[in-house]
Length: 193
Image (cartoon, rainbow, N blue to C red; front, side):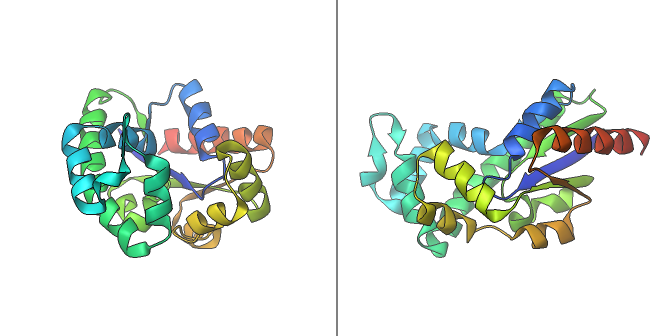
């Protein structure tokens, strides 16, 4: 089995690429979705409210929008949250890999794959990139947030250039048809390894 990391800056289109990979029969673990699910477990809610305060609680658990505003405004708070969430996601990912042990290739999609260092445990990595203005506009439309909020989140991630230095493969996602063609080429290369 080959374990491939898929990453990219906010708004790069990595989720769209992940969906395309799944459509090609490649199992994909979406770290952000699993992190949100894990965040709703009673143990994690308790850890988060102990660290960040009970005013983050809503009737649905943690108010993620309120938490995001808090942590993206303060790198120390973001680091503290990551220290709670990331070990749980890594353990969950290991269990997920065991469930897909017969797959020749599996993909772990994570926004901050390089920033956390978790890419070092993977066989290959793909980064998805797009011009910053396109990324900002995508996120503003998708999340109904301001330009300033998107830029604040971007500051907590590596630049496309830094990710490109670390990645084995780069997908330029301006045109989705072209990005899919690039993914097809990468899959052919990976299957030959």
